[in-house]
Image 1: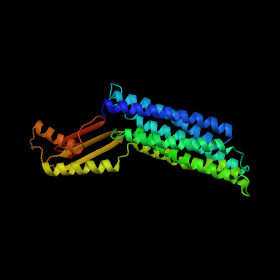
Image 2: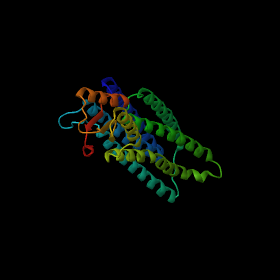
Image 3: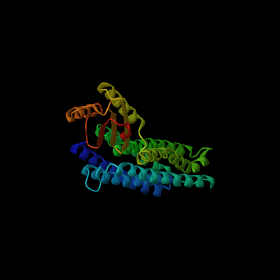
Image 4: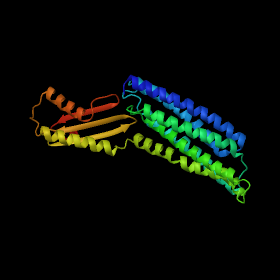
Length: 303
């Protein structure tokens, strides 16, 4: 990802953080005025998300700096670390909302002024879905896991706010009917559903970040590199090969070892570099954040 792409990523993250912060503050204010804790929770969730998006912006700036003497492989490792923090904070928020909603349900519900909530949730759904499509369109080809995570959050918020608006509308329609008492349970019930509905997003972030922090080899990358190594070994007469891969954020680390038929096999440095280029081309070419190491030996213990 070159400098223009890096600037595009940073601009999108900053724009997303500003939009999230504005919606969060409006949501918290309307939720407090109407007494709807489901809206307050949505606002607090968005506020936490805005803070984490700003952290993602800072991380993107560090990644754009590239390697230095202290971090000689660059700052790619910040991406999964940020994903771990992001997932943990938002999952804790969901757990608190779930507990608060369950407590209110057991206490007989609570009175809420649903009118303002409908307007906020409906407008918020439209804004969230619009930003989702905008970020997805502008981030195509950037390969940014930070923007991927951010766009999913906008989509999820849009869908949930649409559901929130619909639920508030039903609660208003219940007024003056025999089922009017049920409206008392709508806010805590929606709060529980929001918590349960939003929980999968941070859980997925935690699982993805955990795999990268533990450096678990991605199955797709491992299979792709193994196939390339096998084909190159067959083409050039190597009797054995071994490959190792890992992914950290958007950075990929690939190491391949080839074993020659005998210690007397002679190949020039140019020929070996040609094989390296062959592998690199099959992998899509060398690019920032892509580390490719290829070893040649006559003794399999070195691979």
